[in-house]
Length: 254
Image (tube, rainbow, N blue to C red; front, side, top):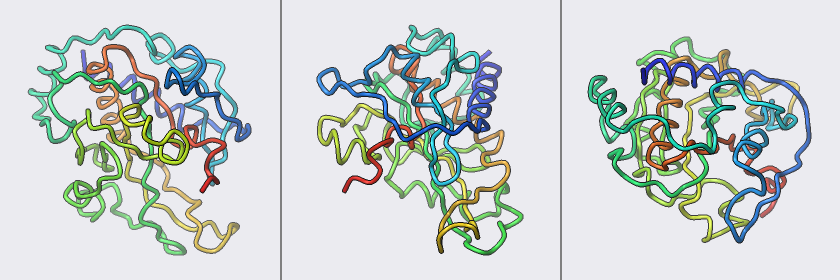
């Protein structure tokens, strides 16, 4: 049940990553008193999951989300902790991979999806083994010492958690430059491993070109599982967001 559900969620994330509609850098208003974006959870997600094109160009707010997200976000959790723990145990997924025990209580409201945009191979082609264990950047030891996010997910669908999920960590300009200290504990951050190349049509040294596919099926499966875990610990289906949408309108602030 858990596996099939996560696969369905992964397909939903994939469809969101594949959208290509151009909008603007308009941001969703944020209520600093309530520490949340100023809209119901589902509407927030439609804004915060706007497609992100090359160079971080944002698409239009979505009119609906792919199922099951459209029917879940903001509603009470429907996955039982004991079922989830049984799934994790049967697949030998350890607490170190998922940020601690699922018995924890998570206060964060937002599940933010990033990609590392690294390494940049510039004018070189992507190595042929980026989706294999032999590629250096699929090594979890390397990412486990990087404290930029709660999770890193390699292209094999494996994850490591440099921070416990409940650690109040900040990883966006919106948090560090705008909300500052009050933002601690509001967002959970997941980095997906994705190398880049330089787009010859762009400025020198840019990282405009991603591999195709940008993320692997296994990677999205693990992303979906981490989203389920975070939502179970939160108690309701969290609002997912792409990093670029969190920083919309703030990316040039110093």
